[in-house]
Image (cartoon, rainbow, N blue to C red; front, side, top):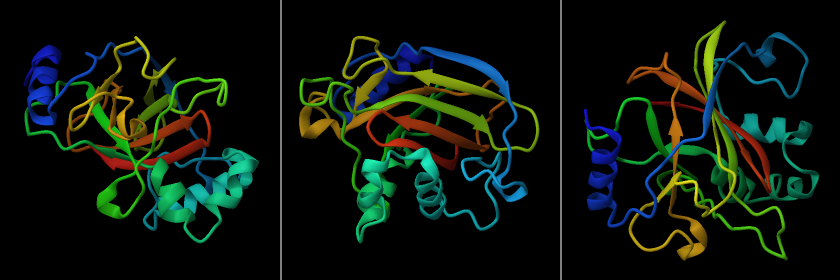
Length: 215
C-alpha cells in the first residue's frame, strides 16, 4: 500500500499530469438516515441500495421533490435528461492500478462515459456565474443499516488552492471545461476495500445527487 505522496506520483505517471496534491478538508460524524421505502418523505435517502436500485429514477424523483433546483427540472425531465443531466451527476471511481490507492482515500469523477453519460464540467466563480460550478460537498457513508460514520469532504473553490484535485489525462484542470477533474475524497474509517458506500454530493449549480458504489 502506497502512502499519499507515492500514490499521487504514480497517478501522475498514469494520467500524464498531477495539478495539485490533495489536502482533504473533511469532518467525520455519526449519521442515521431514513429509508424512503419506510416513510413518506420524498427527500429521504436509503442507507443501503434497495434490490431494485436505479440511481437515475431515484435522483429524478428526488430532484422533482426539491433536491434539484426548479430551473434544472426541465433538463432532467427532458428527452436526454437521463444521460446528459442525471447521469452526468453520478459518481464513478477513476481506474487506478491495484495497490496504488492509499487507505482512506478515493479518487472519483462524475458522469461515466462508459455508461453513455455526459462528463460533468467544472467552472470557477465569474460575473456570469457568481456561485461557480463544481461539487462543494461530498458525503460518504458505508452502505449499512443503522449507525455508521459519515465523512464529508468540502471543496471551497475550483480550481482553487486547496490541493484537493488532480487532472485525468494530462493538461490543466480548466481545459475541456474542467471535465477531467478528479476529486480526492476521504473515506470513513469503518469502510474497507470491497465495501459498498453511499455517495451523497452537492453540485453548486444543479443540486443534490445520490448513488452507491463499491470501493
